[in-house]
Image (cartoon, rainbow, N blue to C red; front, side, top):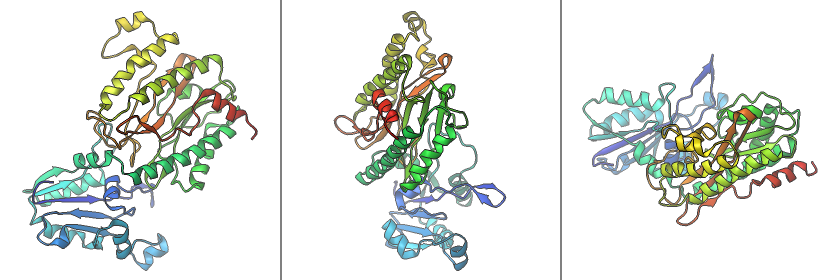
Length: 410
């Protein structure tokens, strides 16, 4: 941060669902990353040039009471918050405003946090935005800075502890996938498959799904963000499952496509193996120093080759294509990779060179609406100085392996 700068991070609010019920609460990822506190009404204040050493780093947590204990359960004590966060100066959150207002008189620059993500479409005013507006209205002559670019740089490279938590989420996801393979057969419903996955995630101490699960059979698999999960799985169709577990706020992101009847048709297997080849070639490209945006563009030629082989595109169509609307996009309309971590679509600059420690997905797909077939294959990769480390290498991915598991004794 700049000299004489103060930074402040706040927790997410509880969002009302209706009446007196709220949506399931989740901590602000940046606040969690910096403090480890997974509790509402949390504030973290950082002021390296503070007038007194005790004000350099201050954590504020919610004051508990007997009433809160009865209705909501135990909250962190001051000593517990110190132990979890490593911050020595911890106060109750009801004292935040007084201390913050006092320290603002000694700061020239103020770093405020907002949800900055180039895929984000704000559907309402976030807690961070409301807090920023309040601060800027009350202190209009300070110089304001964005903390998001700094946080993105910090969060993109995962520590060994973060990789361990991601691996735990992936291991739980693996168990869920194996359970689903044993359950899937003609006649079951998409929501029943989702329930099997949910059971396995929660019973293994995951906090549930890392994102709204996609369990899409037949033509539903051609809808990229299909989350209704309400159709019946029919014999001969494929079932695309984009489902993964969350553990300790860290998210896995897995996609597998399997045959409802337990065996791929010749055409389905041909398309599946085409996607798998693209997946493997793209994954091999994910190395330190590569620019993610360039990689997504480079996969285009790999995908075009496979679409030609499947008879979905012709050389003439490719030669005549509009560069702003390439022909392959009809069958592969999304990117190949995104960052992964505390957010499923985690923070990170796709125009910067990848650095060791970043974790990304690799998820090519081919969607053929006229054949009512959608196939996507997705694994999670840890970027190293050499070849990438596939954190999902133990999860079945070969067509024959999936068939064998689905047809083995229950």
